[in-house]
Length: 92
Image (cartoon, rainbow, N blue to C red; front, side):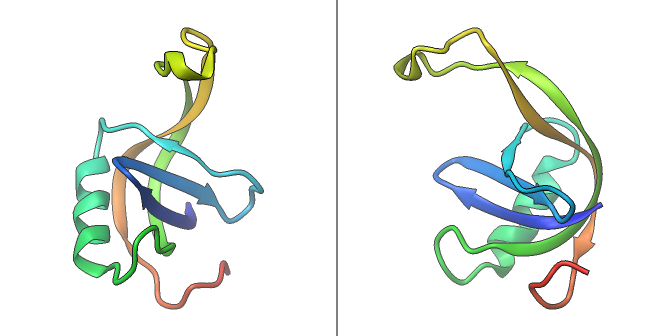
């Protein structure tokens, strides 16, 4: 799967090329490899990088009581395997 990844604060966010919305990347699976590559490559805060990964969507409970939605389910990405960075910044 190819899409744009960026880091917002402490959270990784991913938007697959075929989708309109971006979603949180959970810190399990191979997310650490994706985060390391991002930190080594990004030159600006919250910069979007085109990446290739193997993963799937999961539903997980929200954990931010400030939103008033704690305990509800939110869509998130689980990275099974970070494949690598893609050249360019435009979805194929």
